[in-house]
Image (cartoon, rainbow, N blue to C red; front, side, top):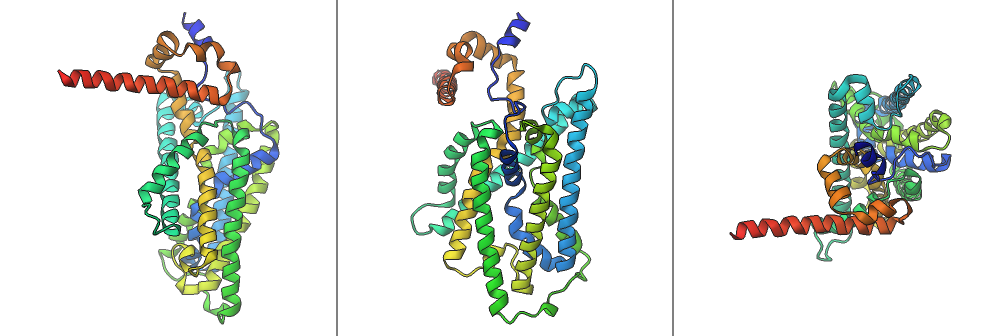
Length: 369
């Protein structure tokens, strides 16, 4: 009975190891996984550390992150090459095979907290910028976040990284255009502002300056939690290391240019977020809207490791198996492999909604007595 149930179980979300993404799709997902809001603080980090120390710090952080991601893939390949060792798909699998149940729980907990924190930060950042752009229209920060959440939930249902690639590429374009506008404003400031290179320090004399800049540089390279999923999503996994190297080379050089130009433009007046230095005109609005769009379509990528962890726990839950495969969800069980995405989504809405209403009704009945 247990084997029959196991064989008939339909995963809540599509596995990330199907290997359907092309190199271009994976490249788009890598870029959108790595580039985040931290880049806006790079010019300030260059001000604190100095333009030379800041540049070297970004190069070191990018190289270290790339190397550690490769080590992670090598660990996965090492385990996969061992006899009788099944496919390692997630961080939890890797943690379990290296350190047992403690390794799985600790790894999944850290990934879950990190990705949830990033996802919440994205929502707050988008809400703050939209409320700033559209102030006076009667919508508060919480209202914008409330309107955004259903959209992000819908996008997060797309669990396949190859299917998310178009959204990732669109997010990359939005982020790139926003950064291009910022760099243009920086160059205009340098040209018209009586710029003197000698006024910009190369290395800070402050003891705490370098550690702060190093921390900011590390923060800029997000996406470490997506390493295994990105590698597993590729059709040709052998080319992942080379593709990752190209992506990190471009991103690192872009980061250095962004931080350097921002600090050169504003010097000691560089704000902790570079957009605060921009004039209050269309360029600032364009940057804010571009970043909001980019982060809105980055959110599903940020939520991807969370889905893997939660789905794994739900799939192994005896309670969920009883509910989904004995008492209800007959349509999903019989037609799951042939259903369209919207049909599956609708089935889950009915299933979850029914369970919630049943629980609510039961609670009210008990409280009524």
